[in-house]
Image (cartoon, rainbow, N blue to C red; front, side, top):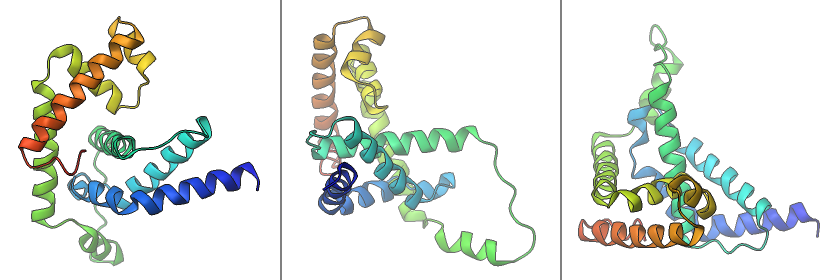
Length: 183
């Protein structure tokens, strides 16, 4: 079996194991309000997982890693959506406007995703500064070495800050009823 086929098989197994959870996590963020197609996010998650497999062929991807990839992808997409200018709507009633209305998230879904995102952000803001910075960098995809360098600490100190920050964050999210999503 060629290397590409091995990587494809591992990626397929990851998607079989975690595909439903990935879709549920993506849907919970109400991306329609930002003009983001959840299918685009799911595709980006697949790309990031593929790249991670290429970097470390023997890595074991646990639920927490998959969730981190989803969350960082969502955050990146929202940041990009907020930074780009709004595109004008097509004039008149054509196929484009019907397609946009059909894929828009409903108010309940949009409100729920926004509230969850706001709760995660509020819990993150409550962490002590050094832990908050470590967790925020981790969620953006930085390695422990990079987190340590950016924070002016050793890799081991960065790991401890990150572990404690994530423990506190998970505990606070669990108290809010969001524990099963971000475990």
